[in-house]
Amino acid sequence: MNESQLHDHIYARSIGLALGGGQEIIVGPGDDCAVIRSASGDISLLTVDQLVEGRHFESDTDIDLIARKSVARSVSDIAAMGGVPSWALATGVLPKDYKHADELFDAMSKWAKHWGCPLVGGDIASHGSPDHPLTLTVTIGGTMQDDASPVLRSGARSGDHLYLTGQVGGSFESGWHLLFEPRLDAGQWASANHGERGVHAMMDLSDGLGRDSDRIAKASGLIIEIDAAKLPLDHRCKDWREACSDGEDYELLMCIDPKTQIPSMDPPMHGPVGECRACDDGETPGAIMIDPHGKRHPLSELGWDH
Image 1: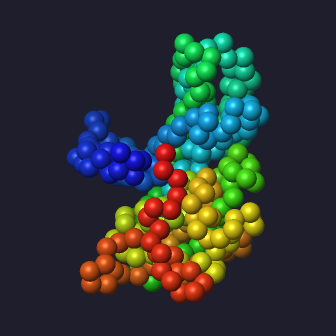
Image 2: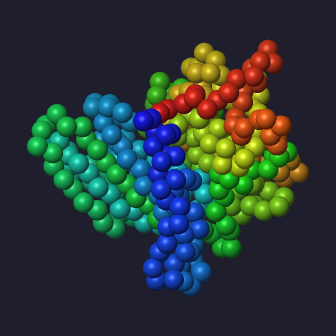
């Protein structure tokens, strides 16, 4: 069973979840964050991500960069809903006799404070073997600014234009996967402009533009068509196919009403790089790349599969 199949199984088994205390699940498994409404009407965002040595970073990676990425991954999920990070919990499974525990915790605490979500608790366990990979898990809770509502993957509409907050591809070769900046400002602009004439859908690109754009398309029940010639590709990528498969970009992909005024940002938004449309008869929802020769390529299998 691959990652996508396991996700589908989890989503199917999560139908009908309910909370006590008058709380309501607005969004459960299947988006960048869970969304919970309290009895008083307040909205909370909840997300959790793991970082595994040998998969997300190499054993010789600087401790500060490991700590940074462990927090930034979950902050990026908050950004993908248009939220504001508030607090963090962290757990670690350390190899036996791990010598950098204090340094690692101090760095994680520093980065959590940097993004406004201080570490308020967690847990540490030690594995019986020194060869066990270092594994970190960070949970972050967030809120929405003012009266903004979370931007989901499932809201894209036919006619929407696609925009990216940065380049795609080459994240491991360039080191971007360790140094990326969660796009909180862009995400909060999107949630503040979430509505009939604004941003309709959004997610962060952790598994690659190919697989993740396909997730938006399927969640929204439509076709996403991306123009390969318009993509802002990292110069290290030989072509669009490699860039869509690399993963770990942590840029935001937005589906925006074409009449929406795109503001000046730092870094600037790239787009439109594609468009959403309704499914024709016999078509199933999904994302398609149109290459420079006009040939169409399904994107569901291009990207990271953990």
